[in-house]
Length: 336
Image (tube, rainbow, N blue to C red; front, side, top):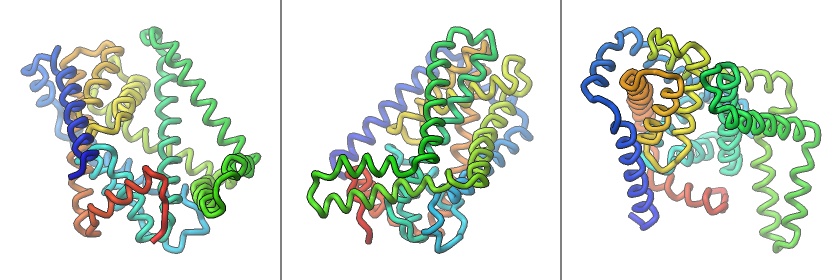
């Protein structure tokens, strides 16, 4: 185990422990446990179903984001998504993203740059929905007025990202011209390599030129996160302060807690941040804590179990995933 891996594991463990401490320090454990036990079985079963449904929708969107010219095979990407999220649940530093990239590269013959680029676009689209699900409730609910400055920043970011997509759809060659001008001083071989990698990365934006694909990507992006909103709404179980807007707000905060990549499975960071988010809605601390634990735990164990099943079916080489992650981080995207 190299020094970098040790540091990642140590940092992730400390981060998770700190988050759990912050989460539990003001909560009465007995009341929290009673709240968890009071959750009805049908709610838990629905949440179990909705988690893989959300990831199935994600796999459909992923296929749309990938460049058509490389689609020599049309197999389902759902196993790859489940494996990636399962690995993220177990290992720190989002190793699951490397897993998805290498599986797509090995099985479907996409380049590593195309694979990595599709995941970057996926994260950008997720960020758009989470930003909207943050600022819409804040602007719509008077009890969230203290957060209006942050909501204004979020709405600005949202509009900025949308404008970038629109600008690219109008002038697709502009980005490559900038890259070419910035790299023209590089040695010939390196310049050609950077240009090829850049083209592969940008090829994941081909969908913006198809009205049908743009529509489907938008609908799927919304549906993926709405599954999480429904989960939050179910777990709130009639809590008056929730409703659709409260659930949207809670899911956005959960996403903020999952942004830090070191903690495996977002343990600790998600708990502490989401609990803070639910406190803005005026929910009783123990009830909020029960929602947080069930929201994370049910998804964690469901996704991990299904991901492990596909992991052993496909027989992934973990050492190869680590090597590819190093390539991705260093920008050394070589084929073969």
